[in-house]
Length: 340
Image 1 (spheres, rainbow, N blue to C red):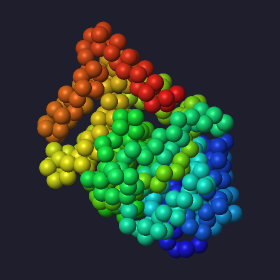
Image 2: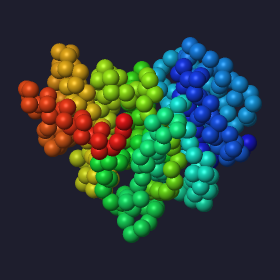
Image 3: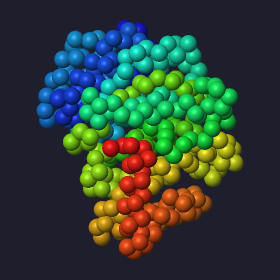
């Protein structure tokens, strides 16, 4: 294998023995141009053994075993070990489309490392036989271009965002940004995608449905009940994002970058009051109050811009009217993105 593969695919895996093979098998035809790092996150089932089997059978696959640190810890470990020019996270229950990956690899070869961030489409699947909505970015670039800088893109729609499923960063950009995901915390991918954005100069959209995103599996972090129970994880991630960049300063230097980052920040921040208020415990109320106090203390200008965004106003309405508004917003968001 080439000592410098084009893409490193990192697969954080915890107790994933029943479905890890779907992710791995979708990559097997591309061994000459990629590397695959399976990060066995202290699994208690046969995940580690399965990872070792694939690593022994395919020279471009490596199995890395670590103590349990959560999904973010697996990403961090993968970034330390990655040899690829680009870095892509693939969750252990998802997979990639082979034809789409072939086209993406052709683009990477053609661009010769000139792109800092690639965007591709992703597809929601309700089970492995029920293909759902495609999230695409064909609207994004101006003048029918697919490559350019921040000033060459239209504003992001509220139905789409830069996500772990759509983004592929140049590995050097990630390391330059010093992004470091929190451990034992879910939803850290919002921070992982957000923090490197100020270091990106050139973006490219490859119009293929690369990432196949399975939803509805029991035990997934994005289950409604799990999100409500883990509301505090959204707080931890939002604080990391809030501290990652001074958006008021960026606004003066690069307005287009600011708009993209502010969009990402708002879509991530709405999860905090949404799930804290749906949790509706006294502790959740206290944590939400302390979260806003944290933001106000650390960056008052950015706090006021976020706190008085129209989405936040409806989510923070007090009393029974506010609680009703939160539930209505939640139902509307699900219908809008057709998540489940």
